[in-house]
Image (cartoon, rainbow over all chains, first blue to last red; front, top):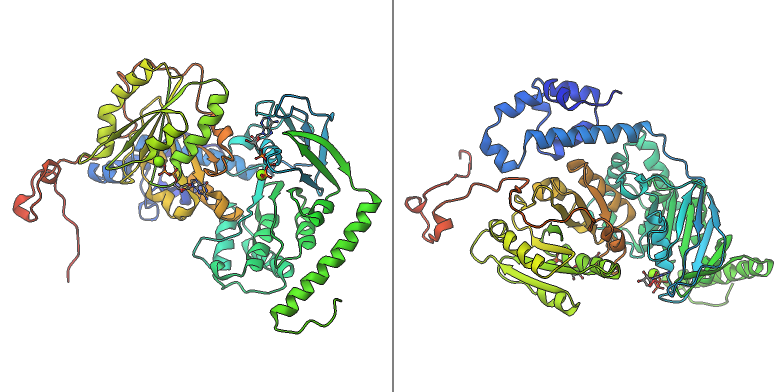
Length: 339
Length: 231
Ligand SMILES: Nc1ncnc2c1ncn2[C@@H]1O[C@H](COP(=O)(O)OP(=O)(O)OP(=O)(O)O)[C@@H](O)[C@H]1O
Ligand SMILES: Nc1nc2c(ncn2[C@@H]2O[C@H](COP(=O)(O)OP(=O)(O)O)[C@@H](O)[C@H]2O)c(=O)[nH]1
Ligand SMILES: [Mg+2]
Ligand SMILES: [Mg+2]
């Protein structure tokens, strides 16, 4: 599709604009211009027919509207034409800790499908590290770190584009506030991503969410009526499958009601890079490696040892037992043995 | 001195975001002052003072707060220049969603929150549509999907703006915002000759002039009637 030219946008029929750029319908609607009933007019004609009072009331000016429309179309075309920057790796280059001492590593590269955990005391700088990644720091944040994407200096778009964010964050606080059914909600999210095959992707998300939580829900359930476990499961499945962001940050995840291992597997199976700041031993060991932060700086990067891997297997078994006790209590059963 | 105007509906987190952002600005050695515009009452000046920030407040009382803003911003700029600020931030509550006292050539920030509902971006007029930077707060209480949907709605009414997510409680994102607020070559020495980005509504009726009585015969000037249809 050709790029729009501001002058041309003013003289061709609104109907032609919509034929050429179907996605512009959203722009007309959200800016209070009824496109459907004015298809036969050009913007010049439309603006000359509406009276000054209406323009005043709606705070519309032709100059401003056309300028924004041109920008919207240009951005959308580049978004749609872009097959998406594939992010295969993320590299952190060292900066310094809170008192200026240089960080003690040469570089840290994390590949897609990899999980890395971040551990360290309160106030040590875990969230700051996550923020450096999100902002694609270039030695211009308080830590002096730099971030590379695919071994190169990242595109500025990661900072300023609203449709392409480097990072998606799973909220610690997993609530929904919108007044919609599960289906309407996913439809809306898919629409905002300009996804054409919505039906299949929505089914896939609901399947995966039901798989994670174990308590199934259907598409007509209002999202605000989901249980804690169901909400978390839906959010994780939605972020894995529908979010555009190649990197997922998790700043402590609540575990009740979902299978964390399956959740992380789902995220990496969709080609994401996952970083988890956590104090939970299971999550901390689920990564391939862990970053230890002290006093604002990365102190070391530890590979999981064989001992740790077998410890993880053991604590996962313990965790399963606790989950099973919880389930029995919830169902009103007596506890007889730990099995 | 740089000037930045910050607007947004009440309680979206303007003061919280400004306070967090000033921490980063101060650590760069910049001297920052704030002026708060409101209608009837504000406690924000106390919050700014507590944080050690020089602040002045202006209450519009019975006047339209945005008209009041434009009629006073020049004096405010003179005050800031006199104080030798590097950056002066004005905070004003957008009260009617229609207006916005943004000035051409002056960095304009609109703050809105994720809780206000996805229909909100299209209801807010120039305050959102002609801002240079849109800050979205309270992302901590909603899901990733809701944040993405909300941001895409904002984008569809103001594609030119930079959209940033800032958490007013933890300050996440405020360092990043601070990098967009001060530019070495954006200094102003006066607002003379500058214009508003959008005209304010023509509003001069008898009630603007203090009329309190209800009834057709007291309504003069710019009066418009609601269309209730036929029974
Ligand atoms: N290298 C650094 N240089 C300067 N300041 C830093 C550095 N690292 C972190 N900070 C600052 O230290 C403060 C605490 O860091 P942060 O919030 O990231 O800690 P945290 O590990 O996430 O803590 P919690 O466990 O409580 O969430 C922040 O204000 C952050 O900007
Ligand atoms: N959860 C949450 N609360 C916030 C956030 N930002 C501000 N608040 C709270 O929202 C309320 C209103 O904030 P305030 O800064 O006074 O809003 P203003 O009226 O726009 O200046 C306060 O209670 C803040 O603590 C945020 O990002 N997340
Ligand atoms: Mg933290
Ligand atoms: Mg305030």
